[in-house]
Length: 302
Image 1: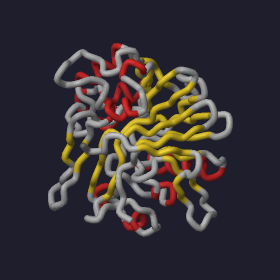
Image 2: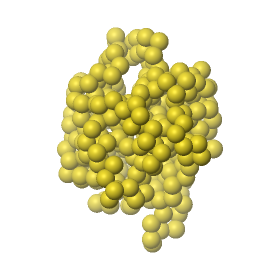
Image 3: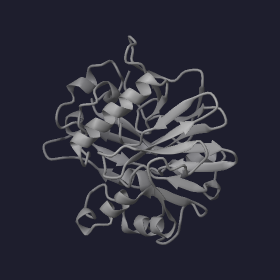
């Protein structure tokens, strides 16, 4: 079947609920997304491309609901489109968003209800709803603090990185700085949630381990873009800042979720962001069944 961006989906871990909230979609040429080779990603039986052979990824945020708190992991790309066409390609490639706030309202959460934003890293498709470029200085989430790694913050505040196509914009950096909280290995910004260093894709990338009363999950951000990457952790993503470090991190994640019965949460995964990985199974990567509920909100990309 052709891949599609994921819909609103929730997973009850026991006392903590994770909800994928779509913002938009990401489409790219597989050969450009994986410059050292994409054949392995397309030959393992996972649905990751559309009818035109374009790699399909979801773009959105993970809402953590626990003890009356509403916390977002990342904020999507916002109301914008970033073209990803490269010389020599003809198919339409892009990152596009705009639906996050409507989809939050579809699960009865307003921007004012969010009291923290945990940032895996500062790429454009993860900080796009921090603020609106048309109204500088105004926080989309008026009551939220922003948790992120200090080395990630330092990297994107260097002038030589400001022109990167996926760099955070000045308004986003200014708003984050007003309410910035330091994130380190083992930080617990929310009860039941622990920061896990997953550097490589960016210098200060973090995943978040979530412990419920009956299940555990690992929200991996961009450490794993596509479910096939846990099967083939040696692949290299075009945007990996430190390719060798990113490969080491993917191996560590594959070992962790494959041996400890941890739900793999990939906010970029097409079709189903909640997955299980069993390296010894006939079908190693599967969507989580029976524990999740799906509902339609605003269609990604609209």
